[in-house]
Amino acid sequence: MRPVEHNAAKTARATPTVKAVFYPLATIKCEGATDFRSQVARDVACLLDVDASVSFWRCRPVLPDAKSAVRAPDFLVTYQDGTQRLVDAPDREGGEGGPGRRSPIRYVKLTREDVYGGFRLENARDLLRYGNWRTSLGDRVRLLAALDEHGSLTFAECLGAMQETRPVAGLASLILSGFVEVDLDEAPLGPETAVRRIRR
Image 1 (cartoon, rainbow, N blue to C red):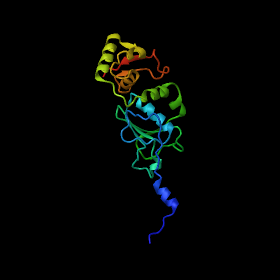
Image 2: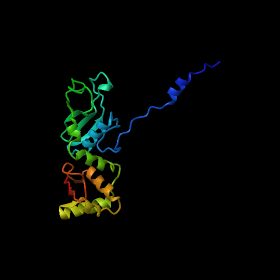
Image 3: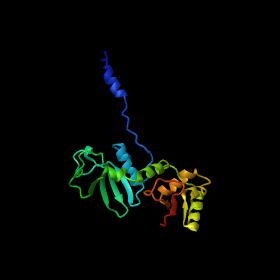
Image 4: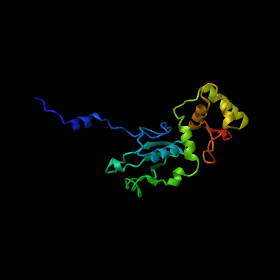
């Protein structure tokens, strides 16, 4: 006769592990899977996505000299100049000195002021809500031509160039893709925010 399984054991096997979801969902410069430890770490990733000096970043990299994945830092960030940095969010406990102390890569634990001071995070979150959108070729050409002609336009004026894509989503996509730029630190993004073309 087949043994009767304990109900608690059956329930434990039937209950899937639910991965925490942190917002916004879209990422721009993440290489590999996202695995955010907390909302604070997710907020740091928002800042990495809008940092022009960042080429790409990885979530919770396992370092060769780490004794446990628990010690993995929140991010391994690679910059445009080729340098790398291990970065922990400010809510990381016991991060002083850095995980994997023998690693030659510089370690930085951000402060709450680094993440939450000023308007940059708020603006980054607003833009990343549209991170999965793509601007049509026609809208991109129309806006870039207008910026070539005028030098800069306000956010509100740029929306008029969007005829095929939802206007705010289309402009946000061009900002996140590095075709145009806005000042993310001066104030919350609004109709009067200046938009300029980025020359490649």
